[in-house]
Image: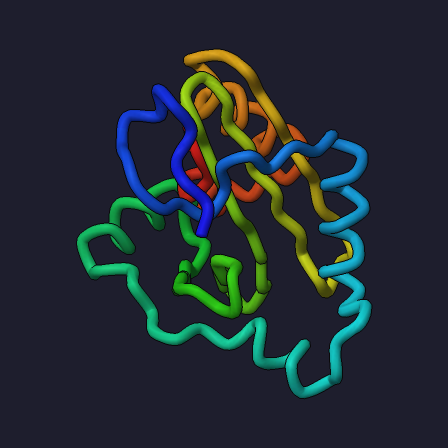
Length: 149
């Protein structure tokens, strides 16, 4: 079991300490996930199944307020196999974020569009920068409100 990084603000086991990668390598990994490489069709399908919708009604209303006037808003979000699954108006968006002291990462992809992005930052304003980049790359106003910012 891995231990937390010194100075990370907590002691004990953690999922990510010591993980070192480049944006390019992580992008290759995300592309392989998006393309279901090395998985049976059953496991690939299961990865996109939410264990439960964790969006409470008040948050749904707050996030859907970013939808253009007159546009219906149907949003659900929950965990699949290791990835957050967001379904906005029938479009599935798969994402995962992580952080350590002063470092932030966010990856997302839209399987039906074969589109995605990997964003790494190394500053205290990382979540804000990630949100701004996500807004430019995938200008879905409801999704952007769920991304780090």
